[in-house]
Amino acid sequence: MELSSRVKAVGDSVTLKLNEKATILQEEGKQVYNLTAGQLPFKPPKAFMDCIGGELNLLKSYQYAPVPGFVDLRQKQIAYFLKSRELDISDVDMKLDCVVSNGGKHSVYNTLGCLINPGDEVALIAPYWVSYPEMIKFWGGKMCVVKGHTYDAYIPSMEDIKSAISEKTKVIIVNSPNNPAGIHYPKKWMEEFAQLLEEYPQLLVISDEIYYEVAYFDPKPTYFYQENPELLKRTIIIDGISKKLACTGLRIGFTMGPSHFTKAYGKLQAQTTSGANSLIQRALIDFDFGNINTFLAPARTHLRKNAALLQEKFRDAGLAKCWYQTLSAFYFMIDFSRTPLFEKYSKGEASGDYSSQIAEDLLVKTGVAVVPGTDFGMPNSARFSLVLDEIPFAEAVSRMTLFFTDQLD
Image (cartoon, rainbow, N blue to C red; front, side, top):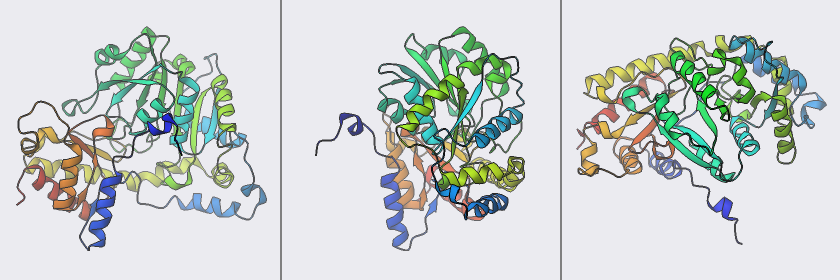
């Protein structure tokens, strides 16, 4: 059976090989510290679970939902968005609309499908989420990359962004809070980005805000359209429930943008997946979004503690060059090239990416599983999660520091 060239071009997940090896080690009875998780290890809020339970005996919970989602939920999400971002768009000549999709990943995929023609360029800020490049490629687009660096906490300058924009650049994706860096771009950066967008009136923005509520250090995330609400006319906002309600498996995403865009988006969704899960949509209509911050308070405390523990362990191990202050989401990026260990792999060569080999050796020698940074656009690095319980997380970091400082036998 001959597969299409399009699907053959889709890359494999970089984590599969290491996850298989981690499973084998666990089956052999070895201790594995899995720091690859992209989800909170908590149940959703009880009030939300009660809302789901209250819908279980109703026929409509098992029938088709409208393709763009239930109107009440779409309006509720827009109201929550405007309130949480402290936005007044009454003077903006546009109607902001929302489509409910099958998770945030589906939202990004459909959005790119509605915007990208073959040959269009999409600007990405590295480190970036692993699925962006594959989606862009699948829709026939090309990507141009702007790189951040550890010493700048992975925040690129406007000059670097400008240098990546060409006449073919149609879209830029901004992911703040950021997966995999665990930071959000500061207010001054967003102010400068708003000014940049005014210089490039043809440039559209996909603002991936799926981690907005999972910020555990002030100041909280802010956005360019808060500086100039007119920019919402060419902005698509991605959101969803997977992170803020700790329910990655329930697959509900939100795409917000101008109504002419969401109408086209609905046409695409109608011919692919149709409407999202009726049961969960109906439960969300009943759930009070005002409970989200209360629900996430313990998670934020947990993430702050693990971030502080990481700083302490890195400082004590002489790895201060590798550390930067995480602020949000659940992740940290380790730059292997700034560790004493790196010379053993690079042997003084100026180029080469050893991410996968280092991550595999880390797993085999210490039992700590991380995600190589190659597919995040950051060679010679890895992402690891801060969500593990404090005691096993401390042990995992201790083992990593011994490995990175080349102190293991």
